[in-house]
Image (tube, rainbow, N blue to C red; front, side):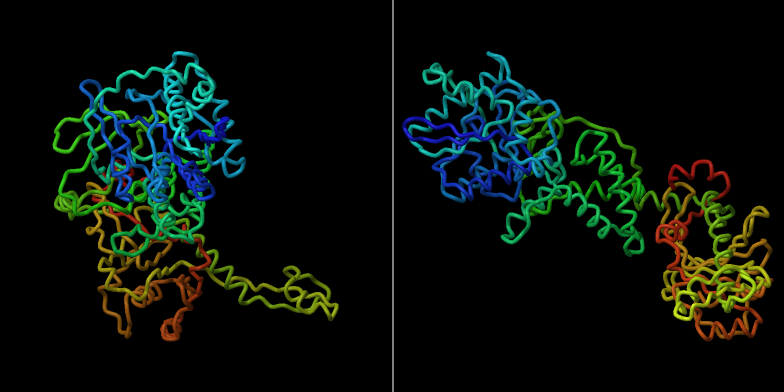
Length: 608
């Protein structure tokens, strides 16, 4: 909104929402495209001399705190994503004066109701979005706090235009309508200002762990915005795109206990983003909150990934390590001044909307001390599996056996020219490859000639040193298989009392179940290299059927095929890439329980 007068002065009046990166970008664009003689911001005059010093130390984030004789504390956080702070930065960079023209009497601003999501600026444009917000806020009545603020703002604008011809004025959205209303009123020119109260002002650096409560955007987004400022070739900030970056970067930084990246596939991240979008739409928004982000992360990665997501979203990359003074601690409507032991009620003057707590159930990983305690209380005489994982692996075992038989039949399938019988159906591939002959080809599938009772799955054949735990588990009932495996040490990852987590390196399943010796301890008169070959050789020895399903990344080696042939067996290779990474991830991780009684509470630590 442009306010012009007969003396040639021009005032560009911009309504803003505090702490929104879209408004900060708009102010920066205005300052790049236009030449202003000064900048005015809707903040109390008491903060004017302190804001310049605080802005000069950015990207280190601080807060200017005002303390009166009575009442709560008031503070202005130096938020890089706030339009007012951006205006001060532009004035410092362009060597322009700036003025705080707000009400000199500090008072708590009334929180705004829910407004249209600022993401709409990218679709509607800034002017249309601001019009929607002003319509939603409405016009406040006379003698209201907003009306009083509007009088002061209009009066100070009249004072500024006496010395400056082109003024950029930023006014809080709640005060914009009354400021425009009073600007042309005669009484505004003759307004009598009350005596400004005195406040004790200090500037303190904010504790990096508490930046979420002081900033309008996520600290992660704020950090990206600061990085974008320092790169002249960077693209414009897209908050929705940054949320995707947050998930990707968290996935890349999130490591399991073996310091290897957890297999959070792109498909899982996509499902998390779809879930996050649905949660956000349910709240009538397009930009998600931290609460929704953590819920979506928990849905795809569990408690540990959700906690890591929470830490990454609250991480701001710029902070002073060498700081000889204590930090300022900030919470919701409370702050703890450095050197004090009691928190004080405080009001953030750059907070437009109500801030409130939400409860989210996340179980943190146990500390190293807790893990040692769990391991100390482990009873070596009791050990069993987790029932849901047993059911999952038995379903996978049945699926692999059927898949191996299907592949075997396909290898033995014979295609021939159609004469008088369709045999086992039309061979579409052969018919199309010889379409020029005009003949039809049919396929003949021979009988299976046996079953498969043993499945070998090799996840990792090259890092035997990572898998010191080798064991054979016998079936508890006739519907379970005899399981032989090598895995990571479960006692290195105790996640709860009597609950240990481990990762398979490889396993074999014999069904119907039967008693067999421990393959890793028995003597085998065959030269074997590595745990994977010993596991496979043991499966060949104890398989009652001629064919053994072999699931791995690569085909069995010539030496392994020769060993199988000497034992009168045949390895049917099933590529491990034919199964989804999500299925393999769930299958590969398993838990060891300290007795069957632990099954009653194991789900509390393992999850669904």
